[in-house]
Image 1 (cartoon, helix red, strand yellow):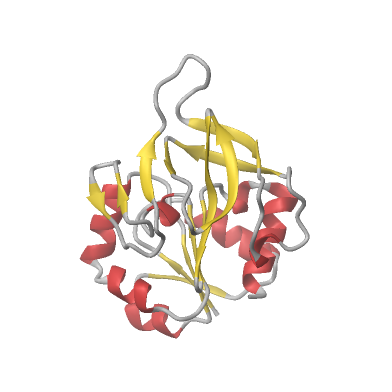
Image 2: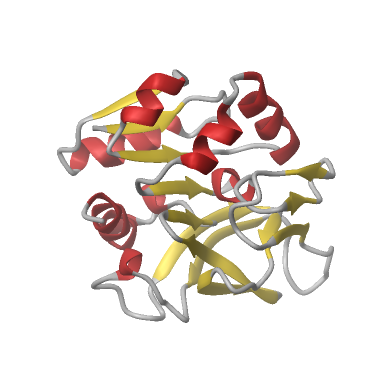
Length: 194
């Protein structure tokens, strides 16, 4: 059973729909007992990192998430709050990934937020089994995780950033696999098979 963590940060329905298309059994929950007993855990997120961390702390979940020893996937803000720190709200996060989250600088060369399809490159994880470098994924974000030892995929929007991170049993995608068509479908399938 897969636990989708409900911490009031949005995009839960899309993640649930993606799991349903794969025939996966899941539950939407903020119950620590259910999360701790799940086979896999997904931390989705759309919104503000500081608010996300506040919501997680109110539920006593950061320590529980850090202690999980089964596959955990953070999506978008869900990945960002698994990093060390986010400039969005100047908040300390869960410190799972060795990365800091910064805001894209305003530029006349590219728009902020980064909304749309971008190529994935430097794919280095079982999460990307069956996916070729150069495949497109769908992004919606103004903040990004810098390149770090945990980077397992990159993308470019003005600068190169971490499109995906991995540390031990923890995975994160800045892009939304649940909105990334066949590529995203394969990534979620790969996560379920870890």
